[in-house]
Image 1 (cartoon, rainbow, N blue to C red):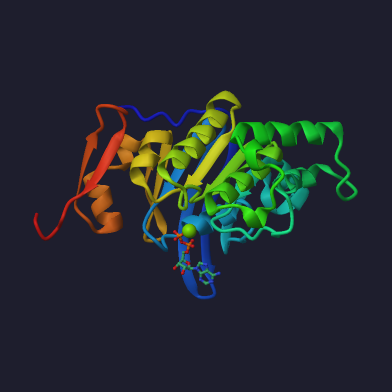
Image 2: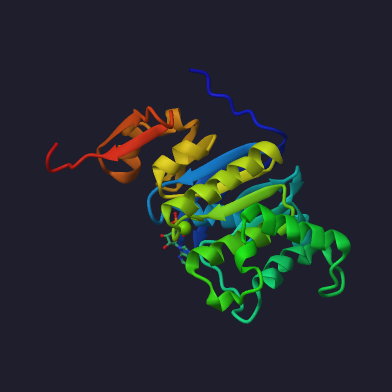
Length: 270
Ligand SMILES: Nc1ncnc2c1ncn2[C@@H]1O[C@H](COP(=O)(O)OP(=O)(O)O)[C@@H](O)[C@H]1O
Ligand SMILES: [Mg+2]
């Protein structure tokens, strides 16, 4: 089978990235390309460096060596506002000041476009409304953040990211605290932003079945390197999963969704 690394124009390029915390090496010589119109899933065991990889792509963390290029420019030369106009991040856990309303938090996504504090233009308001619309959070738009459930708060953070009108949307375990209905809603929404609006979607996710169902391309991290990078079919093999997670699996196509499903086998019984 031919693996196409298609998608739209190139958005991010990582060249030979190595990263560490103090003396502890986390990524070793990793190279990667992220293109528009493509939904990427970054997978791998706990501590594999998935969050670190996102932080390097967003310049939150600086690599020891290698280069990150955003829209073909060295990311080190860009201002924070320039980066924020191009990409929005939904972090693994984020602090939101509790005394703001939902609407106010979503409007914070317009910050990179404003020059003097919060003076919303008509355009800003339009993008805030569109973000509230797309994420379907009208029902609690006037409530205080402190009054929301974890899942609702997550939807607000995603709305804030969309209000930023990014070309790249990065999500770090966005479905971790969501029920199955809201998991589908968030992943379906991201997939449609990728398909219809041409964004590049980059998501860290533990659920391999959801990753296979929604992502065009999976990047499996293991032992500081990319163990496999390609379509769900090429990445989610029992051999790769054995190396990365140390478990035996069966991988089959689900007849209803037509996407791959991973079942972990009981190693005692096998
Ligand atoms: N700020 C930090 N200081 C020291 N070590 C860190 C820090 N952040 C992450 N690490 C370590 O780096 C490794 C990779 O972390 P991370 O990128 O968060 O992994 P993942 O997201 O795949 O679970 C882990 O061993 C983690 O303990
Ligand atoms: Mg992480």
